[in-house]
Each structure stands twice: as structure tokens, then as C-alpha cells.
Length: 348
Image 1 (cartoon, helix red, strand yellow):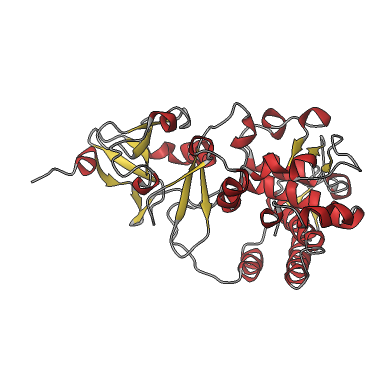
Image 2: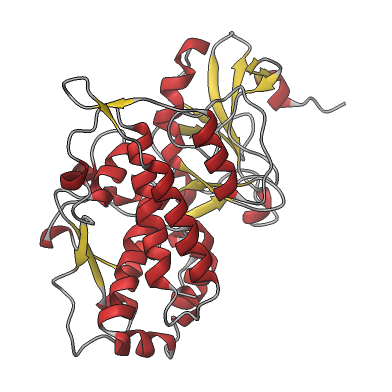
């Protein structure tokens, strides 16, 4: 009888309250021992959470600050509903303001102190890339985004980044990135992206994990813990018995292929249960999640030398949507050109 090598290598999942500890959709403050809550209305769920998990926010001298995160959250919901009924020629504008107000609600609710809301929220933190040309806008590679040193976007991005936004994405003109390049890092458009630009397999950014499987913390026979993820064997050639070298060379440095199971990757570090929370923050950035009927997780490959790919996907989504909101507002002729190009299905 053939032995199950994987079960011999990892004897059981790490559990708390009978719940296996695994990566969640959350990037920060994930409650790993909680059960999954199913909802078809995210806005109502978050509204309920805000109302039942109240927080007192104070300024630096200890004076209570009025919380208005519910106001911003309700605005975000209204902008989202408005965007759903508009055509693509207009929808990016309210969709961006949905994101903007959702970020404000999140930042206010999570603030330890809040001294000057007007100053902190006085700018978006994003602008049109100076590489843009009024006359030359034939494709998404001609449209650039850059971020500033301050503003809502910057505060939000820094909340989701273990170091700082500037350490991964330079501010100002020197850090301007085209919309085409930013779209490369978004998992739910990657299939269309690969088809549009005819990317070879070795340039694809995301590798699917086995269906329904999410990265899980497991005990080894030695009693130490590693984060383990199983790559989808169907992604590779039928006769493949392990991950090919061109994939191994682009796996994040924190992971290695399990020599006893050629399609399983595991964290190089072994650690104790009390260290899981810290390790979660370290490893979460290397995986992406797409909402679907089953868990749809992907490993983020390191396919270039740019550090931008280590940023949270939501950061790219906000930056791109901001850029399109400006286009439909100030330069609608650019939007018309893009909607009649081969790239149109990447922005719809």
C-alpha cells in the first residue's frame, strides 16, 4: 500500500477552538479561530459590525473625537449602488468615491488618535502620472499613476503594509507606474491580461492552489509549525511530478518546495504556536484570494525585480480606479479610445 507522504510529514493542522488555523482574506487583525460568516451584503454586515463594536477615539491630549465612520461608510454604499446602474463610460467616478469613503471609514475606525481629520483627509494621495500625454493615449501603457507623500490613499496603504508604502513604491514622478503594469498584479483580471498581451507561462503572476484549499498552519512530526500550501497540479504538464524549475526560481524566498511532495510548498521557518500571528502578517502578502463558490487562492510569483508586487491588491485597485475616475471626468475622449481598443475588457 502506497504511503501518504504528506500525512507523514505534517501530522495535523494547528487548531484553536476546533478551527484549523489558515490564511484568511483579511490582511490585518485576522481572527484565525473564528468561523467563516456568509453574507451577500458586505455593506450591511460592516455597518452591523461598526454599530456592535463601538470604539472611542481620542485626540493626542485625550479629548474624545466624534466618530463619523458610519457616515463615510453609508456614503460608500450609496456611491457603489449608483455605480452599478451606470454605464462603463461613467461608472469609474462613483466607484472611486465608494473606495475613497470606505478607506476613510476604515481609517477612522482603526485610528488610535485622530488630531486633524481635515488635514489627514484633505487630499486623495494620488495623481495623474506626469508621463501621460494629452495627445498620445492609445493604450493602458500610456496612462500612468503616481502617489504623493500624504493623503487618504497613502494612509490606507501604510495601514496594509508591514513596512511603508514608499519602501515598495516610490512617490512622485520617479515612482509613476502605468495602468497596464498595475493591472498585472490584480488576480481577478489576470486571465484576461495574459490573453490580451499573450504572456508566456513563465511570465504569469499567479499560480492556483488546489481547489478549495487555503494555506494552512500545520504541525510537523517534530512538533514545530510551518505554513503549508498545495499548488494545483493541473496547472502544470500532465507528466509533471514536481514544480518545474522556472516556477521554483520565482517562489517567494520565505517558501520552499516540499521534497516529499512535489506540488506542496512550505515556509522555510519553523515556529511555535504563539508566533503564528506574527508569521501570518509576514506570509499573507504572498497569497491572493478571489471570491467564488469555493476557496480560490493563488500564490504570487516573484516574476520581476520590482518590490511593488508585495503590496496589497486593494492598493492597486484603488490607484487604477482613481486614474479612471479622472479620465471619465476630465478626459472622456481617452476613455472612448480605450473602450474601442483591444484592452477594453480589462477595464469593464
